[in-house]
Length: 313
Image 1 (cartoon, rainbow, N blue to C red):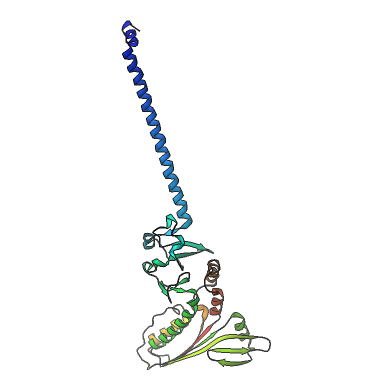
Image 2 (image 1 turned 45 degrees about the vertical axis):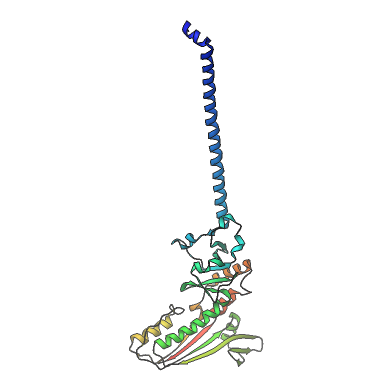
């Protein structure tokens, strides 16, 4: 170090500037470190909030209008109408129209009562809070209340058979209905029927060893008849070979057929499978809904029913 540099270091002003520069650099480093810490803390906080929201969304699984209208959204077969107040205080559910749940491997849309009109779903016979509805297999815009489902299906089958007869130009048709549980059907096959007493639309069957009850009735319709048959629109019987053959014979063979009697098994036009019925019963039990309806019992009864369809041209 030369004399000039020694004099510079010994100069109080230069020394002061040097110290000030040191502290300025230290201050800048400190500010940068503080800023980095603050940014990291903010980033961590935001990430924590995002994770918390993601967990809440996963837990509550809300459905928003844009989700519902999305092409990717598949409407479940089961819908329950619920009061929107049940989740009004849940932040991630604000603006939702309901939520998706799952019971016994079946998805359920819990739809807020305020979103019924928005959903575009037609609830039959009406929209009722806390009620459970099942999709019409042929029209997914219709959802039918569980405790009305099987009666409606039964009435629709009868109406469809009359529509078939009319479309094919029939002069007369009759539909005999026999419904019963598996036990009574087995007994009937055995031939141990005893005496049958008709009471309205029911038949009381008395046996020596057992007694059982099943529904039976007959509907008769007469038409003017026509020799220009038209193929009817089918819903419940579109997969029934007997009905399809009748339509083909009447429409393709120049009215060759004059009369026909068909025995239609209930299982061929079932409302749902027994497996599905068991799952829905589990849902009804879990949600304490359905008014004591046993879907599985109705499916068994339906599967062991018969429709005897007689038509004359």
